[in-house]
Length: 243
Image (spheres, rainbow, N blue to C red):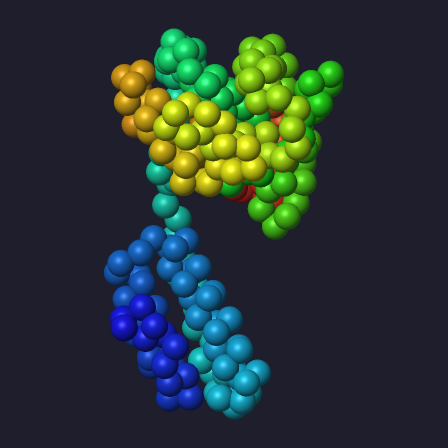
């Protein structure tokens, strides 16, 4: 019952002091970025309440006139070292299974291409002649990623087993180590794959986004222009890249 309580919120009874109370609670319990996302969502719901005639235009403007929460937190997570990346890939190769070959390609591509876990499960094209991949990222925006060397080798090893059937680049694999053609991986499955490989390779726990953070940090450390890095990472703002 608690899961559907929001369906019965009496939006017409909301007053400015209620919105301020929510804001105060968010300041106490959430980071500024998270709190502002909640406030943004609340403003949007109030706008729909106005559109549906539950509240007047005057009341709507009064309710949404709540200040965003200032402040910034450093992003959580860490960068992986070269030796950790090598250990993860080596663990996959030593596995000598189909899932091991697939996982090596996934790790290599996420690291070398800076892909989000939501992006890698949607990759459905790869030109082995040019090393070109078209990535569909946030906001349905596409960008091009080129890969070569060891990453291309890892992908070729996987494609040799996967075959040239249509569909996503990476498929799920069942407990019998057989490819489930047509069954794409979920973002949560990517998290599970990386957690499993980290534990097996004795690598300190990391998140899928840490591979992306490593990709960005290494480019910036090498002196790459931040605007270029932002485009390569699919960031709409260089401020995100800088953080």
